[in-house]
Image 1 (cartoon, rainbow, N blue to C red):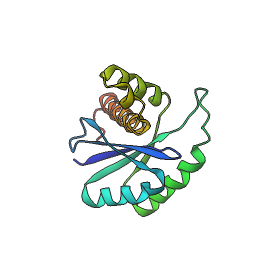
Image 2: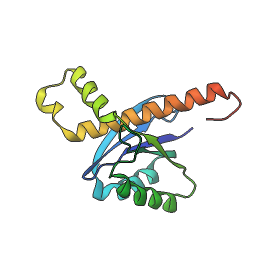
Image 3: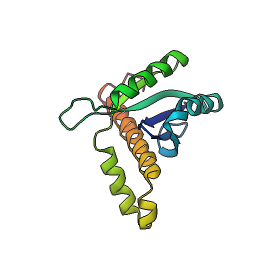
Length: 148
């Protein structure tokens, strides 16, 4: 198997997470300036075997897309054009920032580290990836003959 790359796209910073090659564990990878995101992804994919890319789908609590969708769509289109053999999927990212803040708070790290917005973005990407992988496992359980 190969890795799944998850992206929590932000206007300034973007959190990135990646699975292990067996697609069991989601790990925070880094946070990059959004202006350098495509170059980072391109370089990462040249070095690692990535099966698919999952991008957080920005929705408001009422289900409507947030304003950031207008920034994400061109980025996703660029990924699909540049990596035609790698599926790029959206996965609902509602409440991941809240969950990331909660996870960081519960981790016991100091107040200054908790205020690190880059860490929040990376943890958010990890939550998106974890939830996506759990969803895929559940789908495989419901339809057992379908490959993940």
